Image (cartoon, rainbow, N blue to C red; front, side):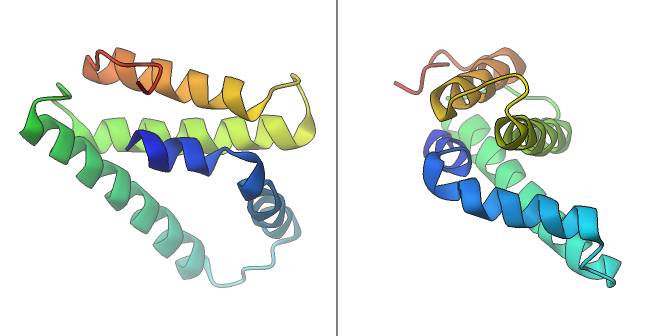
Length: 114
């Protein structure tokens, strides 16, 4: 999970996020189903990773769906802040925020990704 979340906010994904937010802003997707499917898929991947962490004992989580929803929202929000530069934030700082939140929400003992 750490690798996926870190990769979601690295410099290589910056163009993806720019396109994503521009499409949202411009209403490119007339079909709401497309956005729904993307978020449903992203949520499912994160929920399944939380469930796998619970199963292997690396995470404690009574609400995998809620945790996945918060992760989706956090990653989206941090990506937008990074693109807008308000506040200024590096990829490393954004990933650190996600790791800290995940550790707080799941009792993970490795918020730094180690």
